[in-house]
Image (cartoon, rainbow, N blue to C red; front, side):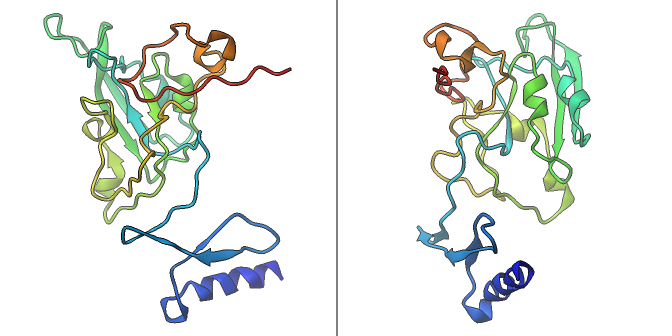
Amino acid sequence: MGLLDGFLVTLRQHRFLGGEKVTTSYSGGRVFRKRKKVAGRDEKTDKPERLHGRHVLNRYEDGMEKCIGCELCAGVCPAKCIHVRGADNDPNRPTSPGERFGFVYEINYLRCIHCDLCVEACPTEAITESKLFEFSFTNRRDAVYTKAELLVDDEGKPRQLPWEDWREGEDLLTSGWMRATSSAGDAKFVGEVGWSGELGYGVRAAESVAD
């Protein structure tokens, strides 16, 4: 019966039968509800605070890039969707605080499975994930995000591309998933300086201490 219910949801989504339905989580047969309109657009369902969404490349407070071109994110990626090439910093005009920086950084979202292993592997927290998950492409070229598209702007906010459906709050908590060993993930370290903040973005509340 669950299989038939799934087909019924699909039929009810057809524009000739009312359309504009959105399925929610599985509960013994998919349930559906009418989408609400928000400023002429469909309302999104709520997302978990630490959702694995579209990636961003972060900067330090002084504007320097956090990526050091180590390629660990590309090495750990199970889908092989990340392509990174490092280059030596110009001593007079360095891009990052280290000896090297990410000269080339690309993510192919036709392959990405949003497993977050790249975030776990990054030693400088250069790559994190936003809460945006609604984006689509009309050609393969748009699906390959370049460094210019991934790098946050001068205010630390993700760049909003034409094919992305950003809503309020989805650019917050871009470091929602931090390594378990990070000091920012333990309530005992509240107020302690661990990693540099990302221009006011990506800072999350510490996890509660178990009783």
